[in-house]
Figure 1 (cartoon, one colour):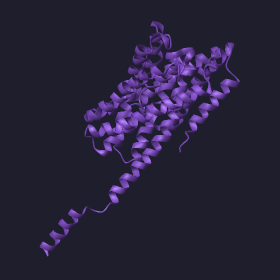
Figure 2: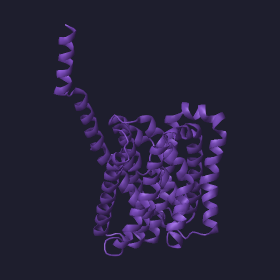
Figure 3: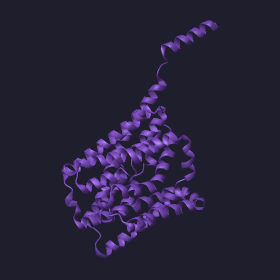
Figure 4: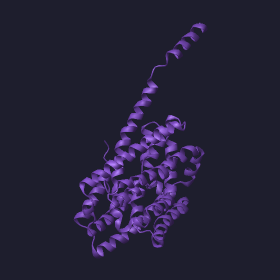
Length: 337
């Protein structure tokens, strides 16, 4: 069972915020640094993401439309359906975080890794993940503003301006400068990956510090947390079944169905955490909790499924030929003799 080491770092950051939250002037400094970190993250996303590659993948448009429909239509519908669980199973703040989780774009790296492990269509997974990230830059904030309304992060003209300035403008700047800095970004991928992860840790520390200072963690009991885990497990199971058997109903081949299942059933922690810090402000701590739990859950479950798909593919390759084919081959050999 894969335990993402980064999740351990995130949990350590949450623990640090619980023990030593940023207060007063330190909180102002952390907030400013977090804002700059989010802008840097989305600038690097723009510099890395090849728009041409994502758009070239549109040649396989049925697969990409299917993944986008799962990510930005079916997932949000499940999130809206979970509204009926408030307040019996989920508190309203936890539900807001769960609904936000369903609006986040798909992952790129883990979708590719699991598709490759399961012997699926890796180029399709690359394009699907990249295209989902590209669409999510605009779609996730718009869906959040529409579905969460004023009850989520207090959406207003000022909030929308922050979204544009902190997310969209840096991303577009990275895209525009990609032809000049793309090579540098590629050559220093490992180092810049550490910058990414360090920036997200700073965002999480700032968000959870605010939560600790405001005492919002008293709203989350173990029973509520257990209820959230169960609800997320049900949502993940529904999406995994829907992407697999839905792909079959749409007459996709096995390799394409694997790409659809892994790209269409997962949510991006790297994109979701900084977005939540902008969209939810002081309420970001509870908003990102469902996403952090779902991230680890999807890694564990998808790793098991990917290994199973790989075994199935190996069994198909090594399976003996059908008897009819064998008789045909023997008959042909006899006639030729």
